[in-house]
Each structure stands twice: as C-alpha cells, then as structure tokens.
Image (cartoon, rainbow, N blue to C red):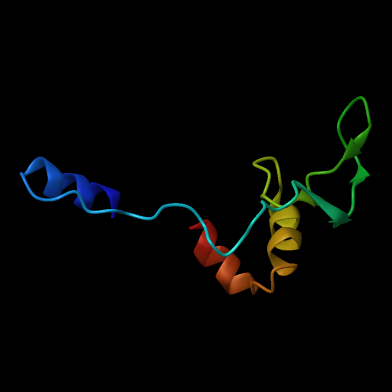
Length: 89
C-alpha cells in the first residue's frame, strides 16, 4: 500500500494517505512462554550437560530447536504434523 501511494505521488498524482500499524493489538506478545513446552534431556555428547533443543520456551521458534522442539512449538498452536512439514518446507 505504501509503495502504491508513493508511486502515485511520484507520477504527479495526489498524496494518498496510508494507515500503518496494527489496530488489533495495543501491546506486543511477551517473549517467553509462561510454561515451556517439551523437556530437556541429558546430553549424549562428551562433557554431559543438558540438551534443551526439544524444549520451546519463547513465542518465536528458536533456530536451535530440533524436530521435537519444532513439533512441541507448533503443536501448542494446534498445527498438525502435516501443517508443520508444509510450513518448514
């Protein structure tokens, strides 16, 4: 919409007002979930520790999530496995 408005103006036409921004929300989502989804497991690599790639804890999917983590993240949003595969490409 903004590009169209600017194109009309650049071509000598009138300035066309364009409303921007969201009107359906007055604040953003919190970054962290109230309750993480999924579990951490003991790491199977030298040095031990915990492997939490299967646990989703934020409102945006983390690039470090493994397949279990992605499933946990999107299942909480009622996505089916087929929809997750289509989304991930």
